Image 1 (cartoon, protein in one colour):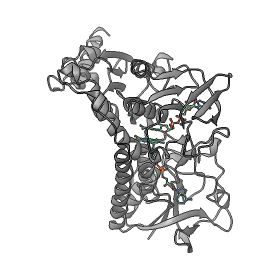
Image 2 (tube, helix red, strand yellow):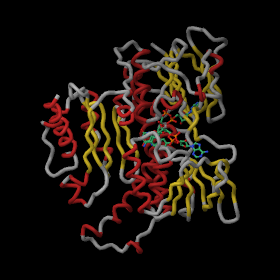
Image 3 (cartoon, protein in one colour):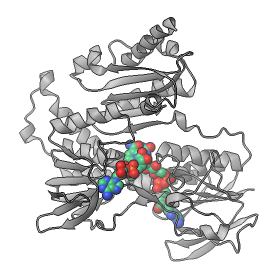
Image 4 (cartoon, protein in one colour):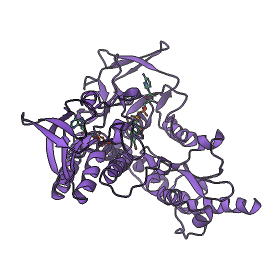
Length: 467
Ligand SMILES: Cc1cc2nc3c(=O)[nH]c(=O)nc-3n(C[C@H](O)[C@H](O)[C@H](O)COP(=O)(O)OP(=O)(O)OC[C@H]3O[C@@H](n4cnc5c(N)ncnc54)[C@H](O)[C@@H]3O)c2cc1C
Ligand SMILES: NC(=O)c1ccc[n+]([C@@H]2O[C@H](COP(=O)([O-])OP(=O)(O)OC[C@H]3O[C@@H](n4cnc5c(N)ncnc54)[C@H](O)[C@@H]3O)[C@@H](O)[C@H]2O)c1
């Protein structure tokens, strides 16, 4: 029986464990904190639960237009309940995952793992575990999966103190909503929290090192978000690199590299993550971490050392739970000799949970505009969609990209309140190389927002006739 040890019990680790157990391997997961990993306990799941509350409040703002009277002055946030729900749900989800993997016969050890091979180059490996009960053990392994995830990056001049200078994992311990929150960093994490706190009525200032929020996302989508921010009074300070954050009597001062100073009550640091690869004994097996400490892997999650795979945030491939899970599963299929297709990153669907949401799949507009990928494109504003009008939605759009000659769908963007759900037909088309004709000839419900996706297909199909 193949002995598999998995370091880390996040999506990469636990999904891998489920696959390995299904294929009859002897599987042990070593996890420091709890099953589900940082994804479930501190990052993805808590933030999306928090956003469920801010999103509910956001909907109230739009009710007046639909003829519903609500007294917004009377509407409030019960922060302890919101935070209690966030933490409770995370723990419950973690317990569910633990029960599931144990049901499948996986051994779960709560503790910290590191390699302890006697020398690099051996055919099998050893993992030393310091368990949470203080005991130690050594696990022999034919295959090891490194799935240790990542941790918030700390700027030396802005070390989180859990009171005024916070990382995103500390937010749910605040007793009250911040009076004025400075969000440092305008990537996906920064944008999501800026949006959530804005909807909760907090004054928010976003410090963006670039000329816009969400520098890695679709520029038109980022522009919609900036418009919403501006309408809600949220300021985006651009070309602004935070040098340090100092505590003052009343709150914090964010000192920018160009000398500007932003005053706020609290600072939320969202300046990225670093992989948890420093203390896991990589030198004992001869793995040299790549740039930024990430472990280099190929498309079936192999590292440079036979028998050792890596998956998820520690590999830095695409820091998404869905990608981590797929990398983990692929690693196990490969290790156990199953037929396996290398991961296809061009088909990954992702969503930014702002208000409105921004969902993307496949080739980006930027790759098309730069000439890297030839494609025909269409952008339909939601304002032209009957259902959107009925719902009072003015902002947002659907974009669809296809190959110039064949009409095969290669990507798309949806900006809408439920973009995370609406992106699926486009993702399905990209994954299965469907054409705009397939979308165009599919019945969508009338009236529906998804009608804009079939309409986008039809508009690109018309162009086909001119080719
Ligand atoms: C605020 C935020 C929101 C996010 N929202 C989303 C989202 O909506 N959708 C999405 O797809 N992605 C989201 N992500 C990204 C997603 O959380 C990560 O991509 C995902 O957690 C990666 O999973 P993983 O298994 O690689 O690592 P993790 O979830 O980080 O799990 C790794 C685990 O390994 C443990 N570990 C580390 N070292 C050791 C060791 N030596 N021994 C034992 N255990 C160890 C860690 O304690 C951790 O629990 C979000 C990220 C952030 C920061
Ligand atoms: N909904 C989701 O799926 C979701 C949510 C959150 C995060 N994630 C994933 O996690 C990964 C990390 O995202 P992230 O937003 O945490 O990190 P990031 O690295 O993408 O963004 C951090 C931003 O902070 C900026 N920055 C760095 N130092 C700065 C400074 N001193 N002053 C001002 N700005 C500074 C960087 O230029 C960058 O734009 C991404 O791959 C993302 O997709 C996904």
